[in-house]
Image (tube, rainbow, N blue to C red):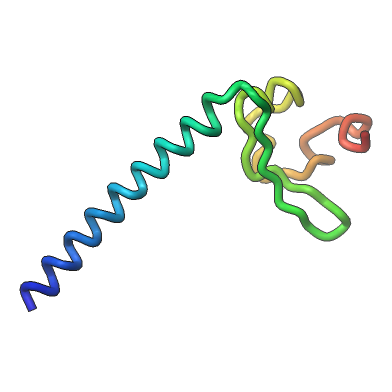
Amino acid sequence: MEQSINILSSKFSADKVSEKIQKIIFDIIFQHVQDMVYVMKVEKGPCFRYIFVNESGMKKARISAAAIGKTLEEALPFELARD
């Protein structure tokens, strides 16, 4: 039983390390690149919902972090969302 607990404990620790590594990689790739990065979910309509936008993307589209979770139409002025 103790061996099982030790295995589970080491697995839990490895998961925490993996999460930290994933966060570091995410930050490097998506936050520090100079290119615009948009991650959007396609919904019915077609409708596109912002899941993630890096700093360069926010500046170029003139949106803020408040756009996360919103559709193009909700986040952008009508003229820009339709172009």
